[in-house]
Length: 205
Image (cartoon, rainbow, N blue to C red):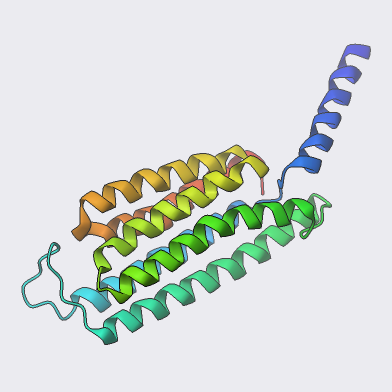
């Protein structure tokens, strides 16, 4: 009886330490919703890029300035929707666990996420201005993966695994340049959904 109480006390201490050092209110539904939005965006982007191609060639694609603007709008809308859903579901999870959504741990994880993402975003805009469109999808995957790995030390371990998978996909997309949109859909769509399902089943978030 005393041994069981001792084990429970140790678990309580570990939970308190985790809450004080890591952001653990991540919601599996945030990942699932982000993945669904990404798959929808990938489909719309595919229609935007390839609908006007007479001879479909994934290695050589002509994209008009109008199509580029449409792709940027699609990306911006997808990002905003994913962030909104993420905040909503994470807030619900935090309330269930009786934790604050915005605290020191939240600031730390957002700062560590932002540094690689902003760097990658600026680089992608620069490459886009020089017409190097084929590198955009690989670099978004790589820098997103780096941001997850960078922030993973302040949150759950599954985030690190997701980040490493995104980096690998980004490197593959850089080699198979013509299939960047497909890798983008897998990375931001399928992997996010898988990650979200795992989080839901493991943490009941």
